[in-house]
Image (cartoon, rainbow, N blue to C red; front, side, top):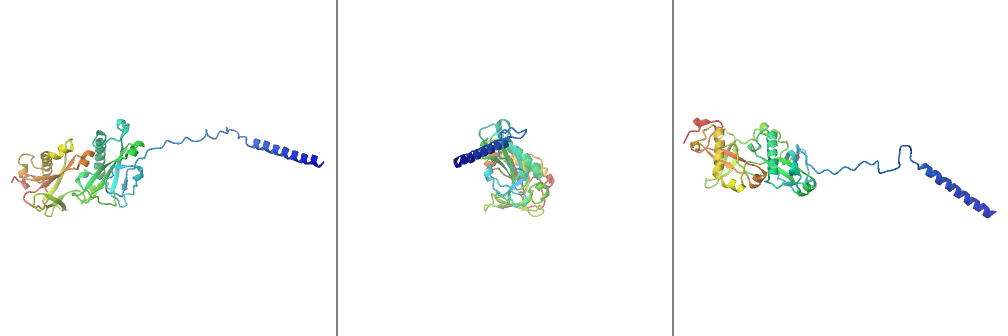
Length: 307
């Protein structure tokens, strides 16, 4: 009787367990409208997008970064102290974007990119950025960024300490319309600092045009496309181009007598700037007879006679 009672109790437990299992299986049945497949309702994982830098941001460093990836990208607000400003971000397109490797500087794709940056920079600062102590840098993706799909190029503007250096000057405001809104930024008149032998200009010190000065910024001459070696060796061609700029600036005849009225000198671009696409040469008017106290803009032959 005890055995039978024990068997009966065990059997009852098994029966009870069986009822629970069945009840559990019934409870796992999916509700109406649900198929029970967990995977077919998941949203597709989006394809990773390549890093693209932003426009309208600034950067703490004032030295040019020629190649950038996301790992060294730390933009800041342009109202904070900064050394460079991204004024435009463009894209390589078409066959240029399909290249396995990034186009080298000095090739058609990067020259076209610099030309786009040049136009955007002029629009942004309110005139030719070369008319003040500004530097335009074409920043390209790093090799890793290009391999990851980055096809952008970045246009950065920097303010320099002076006309005679590439050292950057920090700012706390954007360069938007700076050539129009900041009277001291555009080039004007200068007092030259000569070398000891008096044969060369060692530095230029900005001066009000109503104070004694001997030279004045006249404008930009655009050099024709050539190799940098041919450009830098063609000093007569550069000088002739700048004399034409001076003649237009001072409203003088651009003839054989021009050099008997005024002189000129110029600041050429570096080889790196030339390879990036910059062909703008800064030209200056030089007074032979010493200091003057007025601007020579529009002065004409009456003020600048043949000597």
